[in-house]
Length: 119
Length: 155
Image 1 (cartoon, rainbow over the protein chains, first blue to last red):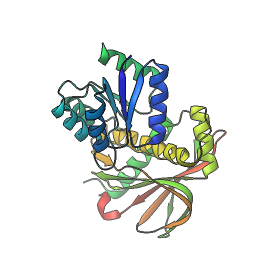
Image 2 (image 1 turned 90 degrees about the vertical axis):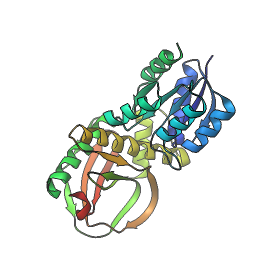
Image 3 (image 1 turned 120 degrees about the horizontal axis):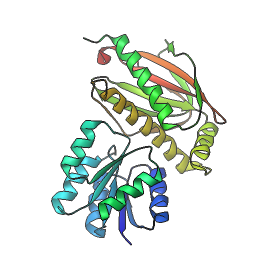
């Protein structure tokens, strides 16, 4: 059972994602509300995968992704964001994200992305 | 150079298309209108700023009961308190984010800020023009999209 860290500044979205992931058979080992917390939680928990929002206070998601990848090049991060423009997706993939899920998303899309990344 | 009015028209189209993408419930939109006063009164609203090729602020304004019903209709759970506020913020984030995606497909680059949720009777100042787009969501209620623009930044 893979361990997942959920990063989003909206408590509601963290709740929704956690529900999707648990029903999908995954374990949510931690949550973070901004990029700084995400880096800290990643270091502590060493999850198998991270779901990462982009627009967040204190530190946005692409910068957090970059820092996490600097510390652990094998880190697996899937971006989950409302900002789905091509430039943003390219930026995220170039920074090391494994996939990009645009909000609002269906549970199936999230689970499909995770399954593919963890395979 | 794109005129201020062309920017506004483009924004309004993108915003309403975005609302329809984010809210999977039938909704009816009324004609936009200009609000000339320099203050606004709202009940519960969420504000998202946007910058880049076009700059301004979007508010989604409505009653807390309407937002609660929207959450229940979209996700099947009653929302209140902090979770309702968070849901409202996330709806605004998705509307603004999808708006940015639609605008980028028209060759413009726009970025957004995290949302700010405001509750209770309040007045808003510090804008030159406010454009209201009233809409009604089936079985949920009435809301407004409010676009606040500073004329010199939108051109």
